[in-house]
Structures are given as structure tokens and as C-alpha cells.
Length: 504
Image (tube, rainbow, N blue to C red; front, side):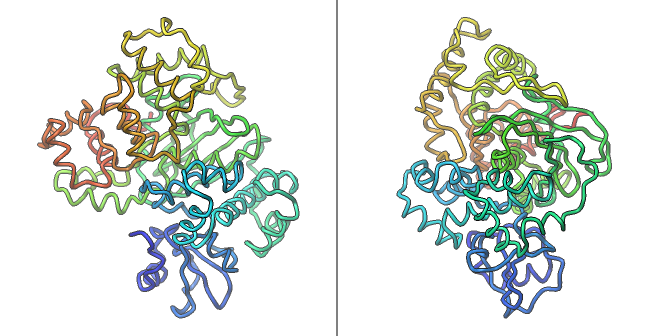
């Protein structure tokens, strides 16, 4: 799969005729005879080739006057993997739009974050996605509105503003235009969920491209969970393979308030239960949960590349579909990366838990044992370094990082330029390649970040007969690009560390 796939008509037609779900989100099929648009895997009988046109985004289909198919619900497709594997301005813009920046700051705010003029941003997005930032944000608002209409009992006026619309009239017009139904009609068609008994809790299904191996993904999050902020709750809904599993829960710092999310893996989706202080945060919360679990990845493309290496092939064949566990808060992860320098997982959790108790923001959690939001850089910037139970040099590393984050001298987020940010991290005292690269991999989302100095990677390399020195291993790993962060997950999986297993 490649950039601009929607221009390859022959390949798109083959994908539609085979109903190949791997292509969902890569392109959309607009049917000229019906005026609707679908995902490639739509279950209906495929139209004739001459009646199909292809667009790179749902927003482009909507802008061209097509309505969303009621069968395959193309607006709920997994996001395009393009935006998580590229670091150019268009990819960064798409990550920011998914995070709700256009709704909160407008197109001028989006452009300012990217360092371009509004005209440049609009031109680049229109050229690649067939829609400008306002149309893309509008499509996202429509999807958020649909989720709230179908999964909550909120009044329509509240839904309109929670989804980001400026007026109820605009909300009504958009829903009718995109879905060919009124908001009330959408709610009437939605299946009735009699299990939804907790007021204020949204139950959603997060789609992904198969395969997805949940072991290292949820194992890593559970094994490194910071008490008060994260937890693994063992309960018994049937999950992957019908096995009773639990849920990873954590608190979320969001633009309009805070939230709590519970995430449980299932064979064809991730069950997501969200409690939000302000419903306007729904779009951002979903985006950050998808990013945390790397749900927009293309595992077929990743595994195909890694499987070409005879050393990695058995690891991929044994457990395909590994994702890179990421984060919902890049600043939080950077702080935790420093706390984890040269100490065990348990020690890093202890350090973080002390900071949470002393400087975190208290929250109420009626469903479990979560007590705080992870402390912000601003809260940590005022702490006394002498209270940190760590060597003096690491205290300097810690205080420098939180001060730079609090002052805005260092920005970590969805819009970060990966090479530039990595260089800024390496310029900080106490930041070596491991710390910079683990932040690039898990906080910034760079799919090619690599950890040749990591002890677990070097141990796995020796056991597999790969070079174990950092320089030689980096040279050997050139064949794995641009997916070296995924190779890290397969190499880590050779160890018996708890991060590699779903909790029992």
C-alpha cells in the first residue's frame, strides 16, 4: 500500500471486489449511480467498475456530495496508516485535526502549530486528501455526533455542541447531508443497548486492521501502570479467543476537563468505556485512545517487511500483528522515561507513584481505584529536587526536562517533527540515545525509532544470532526500515518479562 492509493483505479477496483478489509481507511469508494460512499469491505454487491470513483478521505466524498453507506458505515473506518507513519506537514496536520485542534483553535491555530500559512496548509491537504482542514474537521464532527446520537441519551442540542458544531441548525443540516437521515432518524435506527445502565458512561467499539496481538500491547501498559493513574482490572467479559480477560483503565487529561477510560481487547474491536467530565472531549479522547493502542497501523505491511528477514520471520509467524504501545500524553511519557533510566520497571513505577500522590490532580473514579491525573509539567516544575529519590545527575535531567516542557521551549505532541524533536531531546543533560528514542517511539509515534542500546534488545539479538553491539545491530536493522519500532516489539517478545503477556 502506498501514498495516493486512490489514484490507482485498477487496484482499488480489485480491493472492492474482494471486499478486502485491509484497505479500509486507505481509500473510499463513491458510487455514481446511488450517490453513496463505502469502505472497500462493504458487504453489498460491488457496483460496476465504471460506476465507481475513489477518494482519499470521507471528507472528500462528503464534499463531492456523496452520503455515507448505512450498511458499512465508512465514516467509522480505521484511520489511514499514512498519518502515523509519516512526519511531513500533511501527516502532522491530520494528527492535529484528529486531536480536535481545528475545532478549538481554527485553521489559523492549525497552521501556526505547523509553522505554515493557512493557505499553504489548505493547499497541501486539498492536494492529498481532496478536502481542506475545515471539511476534514466537519467530517470528524459528523462522526462524533453520530456516536453520541447512537450511544447516549443526551438531548440533540447538547450533542450538537459536544460534537463541536457552532449551532443546532448546522448540526442538523450536516447530519442530514452526510447520513441522509435526521438526527432523530439516526437515533431511531440505532440498536437499543439495554446494558447501558451507568449514566455518563459511553460504550464504544474501536475498530482496527487485523491481525492485532494484544499480548505485548496490554501487557506493557499493565506491567508499567502507575498506581492512581492506571490499573489493570481483572474481570470476566469474553475477550480475545473467548478467554476471560480484564480491562486496562487510566485517567485522561483533556482540553475541557478530565476523563477515565477502560479498554478491553476483543477479536474484531477494542471495547472502550469512557467517562468524560465534558462531552466536548469525546473526539480527542477517542483519538488519544486509538493512538495509545496504535490502532491505525497497517499490520500486514509491517509484518510483510519484517518477515522478509529470516531471523525475524519465525517471531512474526508465531504472533503476528504486534503493535507499538504508545501514550495518551507525550509530556507524561517523557517524564516517566527519565524516571525509568537505569532502574527496574518496579522502581520506575514507585518513583512515578510518589510524584502522582504529591503533585497529581485528584479525580473521582466511582468504578475503580484511579485517584489522580498524572502531574503536569507546570506542577512538577515547582518541586524541590532534593525530594527526588534519585542520583543528583538524574535530578538535573528531570528538572531540566519539566522546566523546558512547562516553559514551552520543548514541545512534544502529535504535531512534533520527529528528527527535530529528537535532536532537541539529545541536547538536554542526561539524555542519551535510549531515552530520546524511546520517547520518539512511544510518545511521538515514530514507527522507525530503534533502541540498539536497550538491554532487552541486545540480549534478544545475542540469542537470535544478530549483532549485539549498537552500531552493528543498527546497520543490520536497516532492512527493517521504516518499521524498526515494530521490530523492537518482536525482539522484546523473546523475553519472559511481564510486558510481553496479558495479565492473568
